[in-house]
Image (cartoon, rainbow, N blue to C red):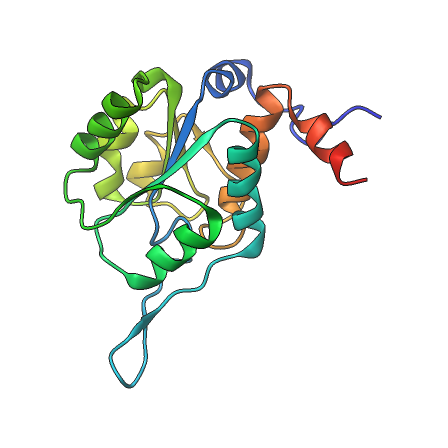
Amino acid sequence: MAYTHYTDIPADIAERAARVRIVVFDVDGTLTDGRLWYGEDGRETKVFHVHDGLGLKRLQENGVKVAIITARISHPVSLRAEELGIPHVYQGQKDKRACLNELLSALRLTPEQAAFVGDDLPDLPAMGIAGLSVAVANAHPWVAERAHWRTRLSGGYGAAREVADMILAAQGKAEAERDRWQ
């Protein structure tokens, strides 16, 4: 049976996704639902969706690098990235475009080989240079209208997995990925 979950990907998006060698994610509002949780002791906690985590691991195991670029600094982000084996984690980045350019240069990749997934205004500069810019379903309208593609799911609720699945489908790896679990 053919993999049909992403047969409705527009041709131009599929072409962009087929070139992707690295997917870069914002965190708050993209890998999480955007809410900030603080305990009585002042410690921050974050909630990550397990489906997103598996999607990020599947990208990596299929030869697509994964990175995180976020403006905030948060220990839970470091823990989650370590758990998922994400080596490229950049926190406290006020200029996400510059950070993305430096990362691409270090990895000898072109902007066309990068996807950037975000939800709010600080993500726009990096999204503007990425070959594939993705806005999660709950992205700010100004971000959504400038993205190449928009997820059906919201940040923190499977949007990252949706991006991973779409990229794997565009690269012709989705059926083998599905079959590996049967």
